Image: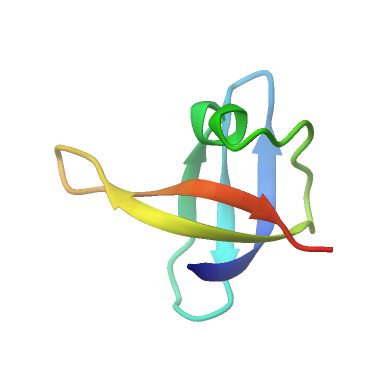
Length: 69
């Protein structure tokens, strides 16, 4: 699991980005990862833990998201 902060998430568009605590590239997050994790709301500045997966074309995306209190 990695730690990070939600950079932004647009529920209308269905995606956003997480800035990881370690690493320089922001991680894409799709609304399905939010829904599958049972998270009701994801907003800018929220602290999260997450895992990463790779798409078929090699892009990194966040999965198994949990909110950090």
